[in-house]
Length: 324
Ligand code: WQD
Image 1 (cartoon, rainbow, N blue to C red):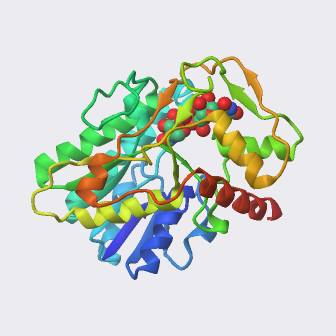
Image 2: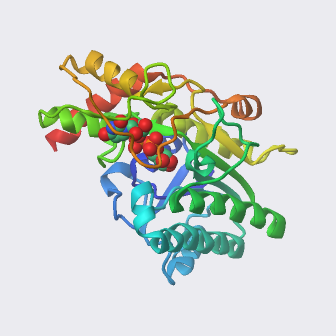
Image 3: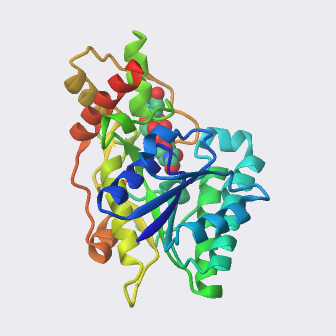
């Protein structure tokens, strides 16, 4: 198979590029390199393009033709919740506009298969212990809104011209499948804690009074290598004759609290980790955990790595990143 991966030079995208390459697929990356790094993609050719710009459709059509592309995995997007609240227009323009250009180019070129990076942020702040794909989606920030709209766009393209798409709703992604592919942005809990330790600060815990077993917020942490393998399962499942679903949660089905993550960090690093429990962070749901039965039943995929693997692989990659 020949696969074009948008955002393939980024943290999650580069894991998928490597897995595809390892199994013998041909890969071409389309990335604006705003966060991505060419060093992450090995020998895969890179087309430098911002999908939201006018020239993007031409650049994509040329790449589809040159590389005889059969399918697309679409990661390229802005992904910071807080930034999306501050700059909503930018999120609509980049995430929705970029996806619109991509879908138009795919239609023009007859590339009919897509795996789209959606997010658990589409659920908003649910009041159920686990969330199912057929439950309500009420995103509470522009980031989550643009991801939900992206799902609608892929579905509309299915109706209009027969696109076969899988929308993957990621939960809290962390860890590293290879030490050189760690998350270099310090935006999520695990890297934020590592940086605090590096700088001799106590890690901050946002909220100790949630209605959870230890009072800190609960999330479903999924290893990036497991998440990457879910993309291959989704890609391979696109051709199934009678697909019942086009949206899948990608998590483990198990929640971990912030304090449990800090325990895992203490265990892995051997460093003293002294939580500094503060006020809740605005907009945080108390608990967000995936129901993973659909992806298991439809695609035969389950996560195989737990919190200890996530934290230890992230820590190993953090050392590599620090040495650079
Ligand atoms: C995890 C938990 C924090 C920092 C976001 C997006 C989601 C997905 C993943 C992309 C929360 C707590 C954090 C700190 C803390 N992104 N925390 N101290 O907010 O669950 O999810 O990223 O698709 O869509 O919404 O992730 O890593 O920011 O936080 O206590 O210094 O850790 O309050 O409970 P979040 P996160």
